[in-house]
Image: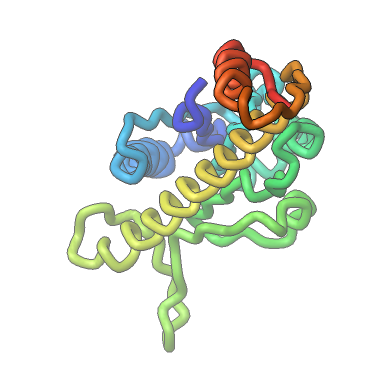
Length: 220
């Protein structure tokens, strides 16, 4: 599966019961796909999964990235808690273990959440807060406006930060995967020792070397 098809937006069941939360998640997913498509130059597909139905074993690849929209229901979901730990176990044991596992979890906050052990467990992954507190009044402003006059400096600026960070993480994983593939290829490649020759046989030796390399051998 392509790295750009291994993104999973994790939402909670309560979102489906609250029209405002449900609509926000739908629009968030749509706009993030559009931004990532522009950055990658190819079609990006984000899969939406309910936190109570998350099954890491069925979706895990070295490129899998999780995007949980953090709500009380999600934090208290025993399934989500178990599956995040499962994701951690699989990620740290994968070939691409030079990429920290928690950099593949992008926590999305529509509203502030504090004081939960799961957030402590994921503390090294970055928060993307789609809200802020007004200076002076300290009023909470939630980025529910996608196309209003202030959306460019609130919702869209934060969404671009998220999309850019996801894209850079995908590139980092791809670079590591490519390097590992080259190393594995070298280890599995059959080596042939080709003796040095006098100057009168260099052309013939080079011909033999090229033929061996064309057939996939590593020439010593």
